[in-house]
Figure 1 (cartoon, rainbow, N blue to C red):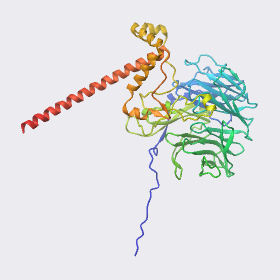
Figure 2 (figure 1 turned 60 degrees about the horizontal axis):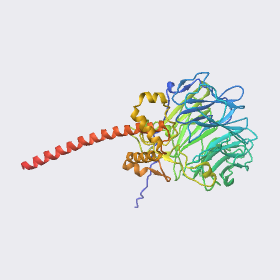
Figure 3 (figure 1 turned 120 degrees about the vertical axis):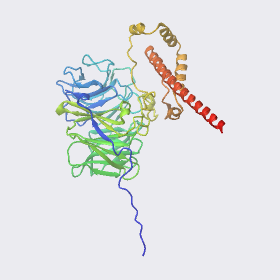
Figure 4 (figure 1 turned 90 degrees about the vertical axis):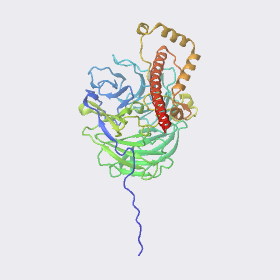
Length: 525
């Protein structure tokens, strides 16, 4: 009699994100009384960065949007100033990834406008844009900033064209894009870049997904699957895969996963439900998590993407009775790492005139920095200039650490310090020293580099280099305010090192005492 051994494998996957949960902000930390747009256009209508929440609003006579400081929660003043320079409804807004005070908008009036947001609180409506882009012949529905090159903006409209704009010019009105892509035969519904911005994926109303070389203006791959009507498409970071959302031939909402090099057949197709609202996908390349939200739903489904079958692994679902019309998300550098927050959404709930933040949190008992869920992430420093990218160069994003106290390469402006207040509060010796440093930029650079080298620990030196950039090396300070900030940081570091030295001295004395006691004990025997 032969005994057959049966192999057994568990039905669950081991993952550090299995227990991620969504946590809605309390009423006090929501944005209330916000006149959210009633437009039926299928866009996010919301853009967020570490300083501001921008949201498209309902208004009569032209288009407008609000820019609200992130910390200014609660009820919004009904007379709060708006950005209202468009003559038609605003259809899309996007923050510049390398400047937290620059935002682009597009409208039914066929224009794209780029706005400078003042560092102080808005007191009056802004009607004059920094730049105006005039190239489309019909309404403009989508805009996207290039992920690694500064001042490169993509726009597409109902004229079926994609236009590439170089904003690194002095002209306030730009009428000719640097490149126009013509070959789409219908309205483009979605655009997405790969990690270094060398490829662009589009979803079109003709049901086709295209992977394009944007500088050459050529199609590299094309998918035309009759069983999947695509609405949105998304590059999945460095996974060499694309994800699309749409509907099946039975009108069920559906997500599909594609191999970037072969779009003939999807790797995975998964039906979601029979609802009619559009599905918005969001991908976090640091954690390989995919979030799927439906327009008109209150739920957020999230998955983990793997490089091996079954590729798409369902984790959990956040449920809420409040349906969202649009959605925004906070960049990684704006998250609260002390509470293990790995993603944050801003749900637009027009029924209650409310913007509700929802944090996705990994439950951890330790209050220390969780390095395994916060790898190096894209910072706010461009890897290329506009001209370098247009000339054919490709570089991945400049990475930064989210560890508290590390040097964050972000777009924070210098702290506004008035000269009069500075002279009244700072000692004359410090002012003389600052003036002396300003006059000698070579000495500034030497001190800056020396300080940054001293500040790094051995662990930091190992992770400092990323994509050829040293994330700890910042440009030398050029203004008095920047020098003062550097001086205060140095003072804080000196205090920290003194405390560390005192602790080490105490430990040394304790060890010396223990050695002395051991010697005395051994001498007795």
